[in-house]
Length: 339
Image 1 (cartoon, rainbow, N blue to C red):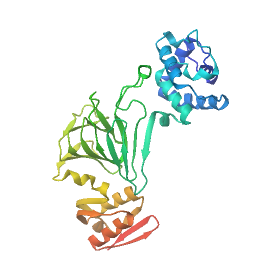
Image 2: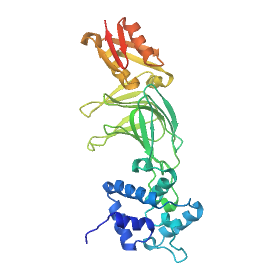
Image 3: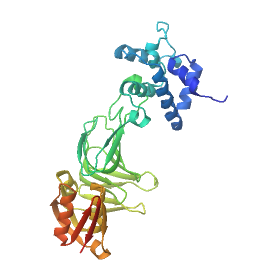
Image 4: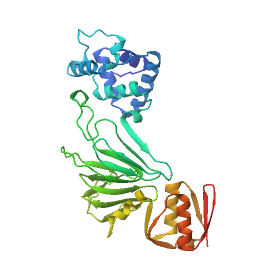
């Protein structure tokens, strides 16, 4: 039999008037990720015309737990189907948690319900403590996303549909200090190019930008895998290793004597080791949002070595001019380096 889920059916579901069979059909329909955005759109529209009183938390949680343990989530005889408790009808635990967040917080989008999103602007760094006690520092123009529910911890039985995880999705650059948990749940950082960094308890820095994907390990142990190359064996890093993901999808590993140098940006310092002006120009664009032009390929190939302080874009531009004995002009967000 063809499953037909439309706005009318879902409005009845939100009101708590669907049959057990209809409820099961809706849950099957919601298993398809493509349908979830439509669900939340109709839920939001329904709420705008059915304003609710604030839920009584503890009794509501108790009713939800009882319903989830009963066949098809059928309303118990002593529960009169009123508007006040419409929200707690439905046996899908994840949807209960997500809908509660939507009602209380006013979030309108699926990702904002499921994930916590943190982003930094150009020239900004930010320290963050994750729900499992791990910490990270975001570099400029970077973002992380992680599960709002069940990050590293088991949830109550009636929310058991939400599987605990420690997945962090990173775009940009961040330094991590990962806490080891008694449940041994692994911590995974996922970058835009499909590099997965799996750890237990360790300290490392990840760069995941368009120009380069790199991991620098200071302590502990991490395992690198590629989501699109499951046949490629994982690479296990040791402290002092720096691994770059090459355009070919291969790992290039090298050793460094001072792994802490990879985190110098946390203290507004930049460490270079025969780094070309072309590479530094890309860093300036990423961290400060400027558009950099270099007058010639020969100038772009000049290199810099050492560790230097730079608190903002102007500091960095002046530093490069002084070190390389060159000139630069800046017009708004455009920069030109010349001899």
